[in-house]
Amino acid sequence: MTLRRMKSYTGGQGYVYQYYFVGKRRALDVSTQAASDEYIFDVTSDRKTTYAVSILLPDDAVREWSTAHGRSLTDAEQYGAVKMRLFQAFDEIEDMMGEGRSLRVNSRQLKDLLASLGVQ
View: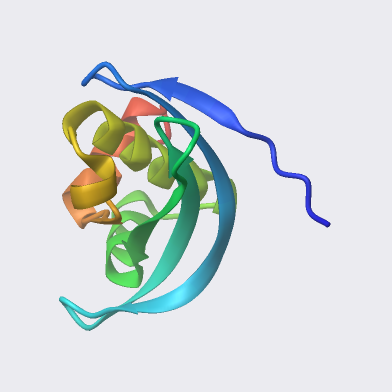
């Protein structure tokens, strides 16, 4: 039995979300056919209904950042960017269950998200 640590985040829309990280797996972004890592979080805003939110981090975006900065991103840095993308969605999307279940991190977003974390 896996014990997961539930975390909370108050979004910009006024909802208090609870979430935990489920896992990471290789995936193909069906909209762009890009090889990606898929990070999966279970999320609830009412403590009754829990739903999965997938965030795709394309290999191309990671490779572009790495080329520009002369080093590879660590797993922790990649996870940090993905988690910041989740928080961004909590702040911006009013209906997460209806509209925020599948998110992506493009090259520009990756750069901005990492910069907000102080990753150079």
